Length: 81
Image (cartoon, rainbow, N blue to C red; front, side):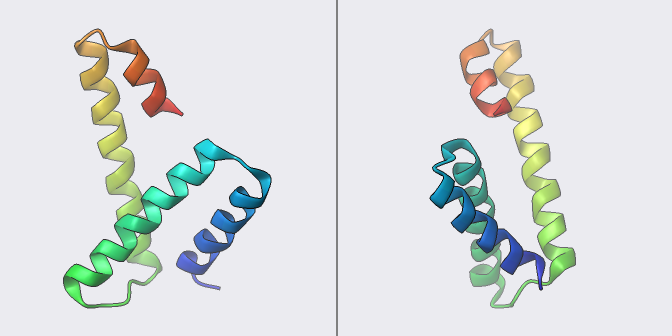
């Protein structure tokens, strides 16, 4: 089972369990994967999915840092979920 398939299955599970925060994060990840596939006209493999996850994690950490510097703890807390 590829990582992309596993993430899609996790999305279905989150939908059934009505876990909105988890579902939102998974949808964001799948959107980034699909965007890479469309932009580069490829099918991503597991290594590329891991690279996308790493990039999204760095973006979230940077966002949290910027929100905290701007004294916007409400937005920082939302990113931490």
